[in-house]
Length: 174
Image 1 (cartoon, rainbow, N blue to C red):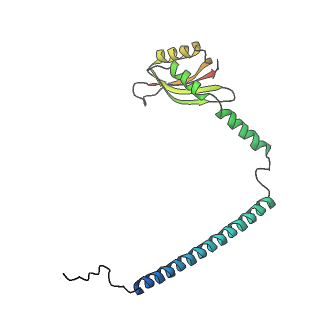
Image 2: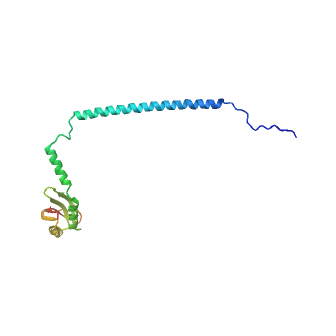
Image 3: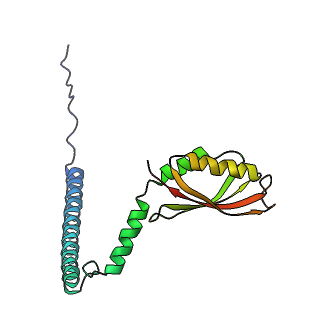
């Protein structure tokens, strides 16, 4: 038997396509690094501009008088009065009114005065007896004092509650 010449190695390829791909990759990498450098420079320029503007604004704020440093006694007193009025326990007042109420009474307007604690109530009742019962209920309640009817009038604009009334009461916190 004769020897067979078997060659399993592939024929040598040209290195040219690999070198071309490497050259293209190097060009793209160089361009990406150049673009990155340009972006970093632009960011640094923007940060420097922002810092310069912030310094200018800060200098202008220090040069001009601040409205917060100018004090107006009347305005300060008004602010304190409004804050005191808002800090009242209004939920307790409303709960006390709700507990004294009945189906025969419809309150339409509640006008409290935080300073004097006097509350004016406007509403409608089914009849005079229902209004008198409501007044006596308020007088007996520990949250109310000096309950006084101010006016009453027949008004048919509210169905089922033709008696319109206004009363005042002093709100007492137990």
